Amino acid sequence: MLQEMRKKRGMTQKELAEKSGVSIRMIQSYESSDRDINKASAETVYRLAITLGCRFDEVMNIEIKNKAFGKGE
Image 1 (cartoon, rainbow, N blue to C red):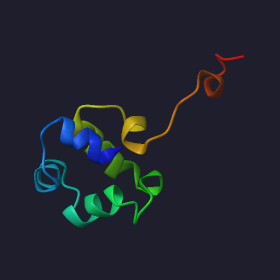
Image 2 (spheres, rainbow, N blue to C red):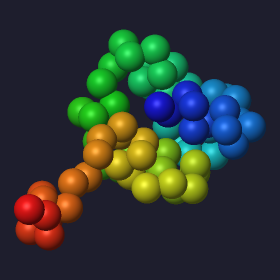
Image 3 (cartoon, rainbow, N blue to C red):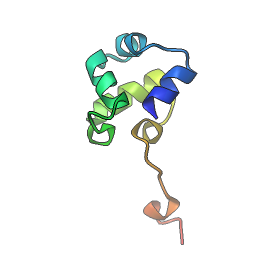
Image 4 (cartoon, one colour):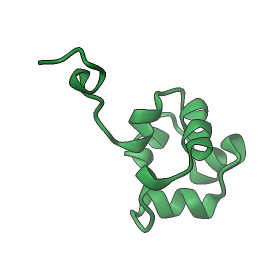
């Protein structure tokens, strides 16, 4: 998911690393699934989300359900 979002925005891994302050090795690890982005620090996810112009849950590749917030069935 991270790789798709980065490419949609026309960014290289290097550009994302420079703009977000997240190391290129970490970005490579998340994109290749060597590391689980769902276990990344809140700061890392926040930096990536801000840089990519998206929500944190989009970076983490999770689906937030209304039920989790007491709004669902």
